[in-house]
Picture 1 (cartoon, rainbow, N blue to C red):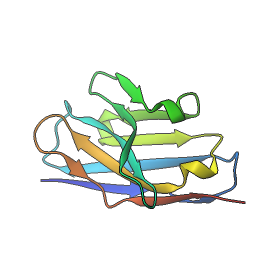
Picture 2 (picture 1 turned 90 degrees about the horizontal axis):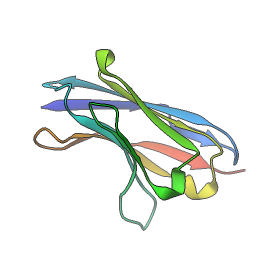
Picture 3 (picture 1 turned 180 degrees about the vertical axis):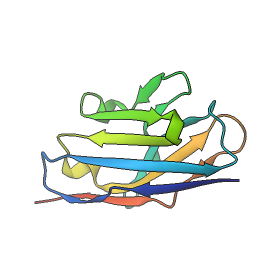
Length: 115
């Protein structure tokens, strides 16, 4: 089992910034892909950004140039730096761990972009 603990969500004005963190523990592998998905009310969960063990990054088109995913392998932690936030970024953000067996998800952290 893998446990994922997220932090860093909250309320921010349009144009603002937030950084999400997700720490993995348990039976973790340094070869896992980690990243973030989000789900807005009434919508399906969608990919935001992922990063492989080798550092290859994937971003949703809607966040390219604004969001940056990174990881600290020594701490088994993945980050999501979100700049120039827009109201349409409002969603519950879920940490993802996978690619080496079963997928695991965090409990989710709310990000609300509103003036």
